[in-house]
Image (tube, rainbow, N blue to C red):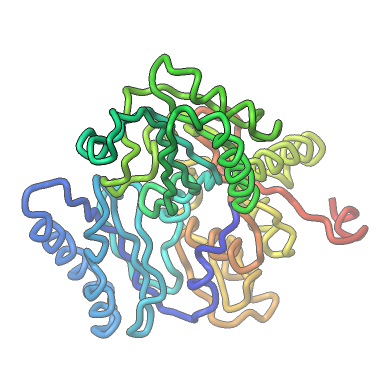
Length: 382
């Protein structure tokens, strides 16, 4: 998973105030509940030494995700009196937290962005043109096909769904129209680099979907998963959710993106040859120091040491202050290990692979690294 969504946190010097709040509105009096949660975290930030301007900047954006349906949360980051990043969490945090320190506490946000799979959702159902309209035209009711589609990135589409397109087509025109929509879907999937297609159809209605699927390019057919549901369920677009969200969740549960699967293939080969360079806190820190981390692997919950040391440059991360002092590093500070690893990965251009719960790849300390080789000298170091 690329970490571009964290770029606003990459280069500002800090210190940083980071807050994670449950801002779900599916409860009685949500504004009161959110306000109470925030006051607890505001007090925690003040106790940690956060300046009033930075705390006020956070307070101004708490709960601004009020249009989102269902359970969710907010991740908020501010420094020196201004907001650097706000993001919606597909799941409420397990507990509300706030931290003031030298680096932004971004790992919980990164974990909720994973696996970051681009997909295309398509929904098909049958409907009938309203009788009153039909009678005005001097006709009886007209059977129609309804097709809706949108792209997204899972799981963040739960809070930021893509733009939905919906069409109604008389059934007798469906075979002709399906060719046009198949071309539109192929173009949409290509432009958004969709890795999988989830097609929802009415239970037992294979004809509508069959006509469309047979006109899709073979690569889309090969990436297609067909699911069934009761007629007209969840495709009208009036609930603020991603199209057929529950089906997308079921299809993509436990998956990795194609890029992350490639990283894992490389990792298994690499570890067979160089196990001590491939897993554990020391291996990851060493790769980040040398700018050789192509991707950092994380298996939550990790068993990292409590703290790591960092300095001002992207690759200045170490297990001890003495390691950095040898190189004349300035601005040394001790940070939570997961925060330090993620920040170094972000600033050195590494990606992040979050292993799904059912992946049985063993990782010392719950972390590993896929190495990048820039020249022959890098290979010699191994």
